[in-house]
Length: 351
Image 1 (cartoon, helix red, strand yellow):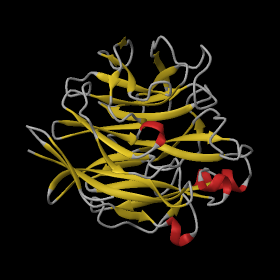
Image 2 (tube, one colour):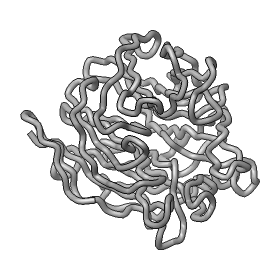
Image 3 (cartoon, rainbow, N blue to C red):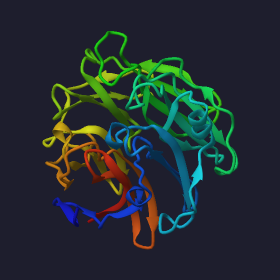
């Protein structure tokens, strides 16, 4: 991958050179699924990553445990890794594998880790999904509460956001990746007590969830909540719905068109621009799009051209001496089809 830029009349999206964050090649491991990051104090954030088998499914498996590190200087340096206790205990007991795909920080500093739970029996260890669990830290990630079931439906929490004291979690209620039954629906759950409990807010009324899977959501600057879902049958069209009442009711619109396709979409907002990134059409390439309205997207740009089990990603908004930037964490191949390192790149908006 090399330095690239998306140019527009009003702004440019600048990508700085990527760097290795977790060198799994050196330690003969792999790292999939877990890319959660969240800032919980000024310049301070927690960063989760997976420590997985490099041989099971060629490295494309979450058979292993979760680690986390802290940065106190907006990503310049990191502490030594710690093991996330819930994942380690589950692994040692042979019960299930744990992933932390999303986490949020509440106004009082509570860190809420939303954990996916899978049987160890399937080789890839990320299907079938069981009911998700929640683990909280009240002391900045030094210790963690006991896990509890936060949503009573089997499925995968693909995204979570925090706004005005409320956690919003988006789950696809399906034991497996792609929908094929009427009960495979996208639900929004909310928590108003810093992750101590969650309540169902709504079912997003997409007319069809057949062959749907990944999803993400984003509040826009007007307070409207957008939800987007992946369509395996048409990877250049993201199903789109929006809510004007914080996820209680929804309007389903025409799909959003993305020229290079999108899988496992991730979305963020920075300096007046919405950023969408994920795996490109047919699972190839790492693609980025930008938009000023979260609906109409530019032609996109590739930042990687490796086929295989990589480019799962997440994003956090940080600030350094240069200004605001998005730190993008993603998996990148180092060997074979799916042995991956965890990488970091910085994205900035220039006007």
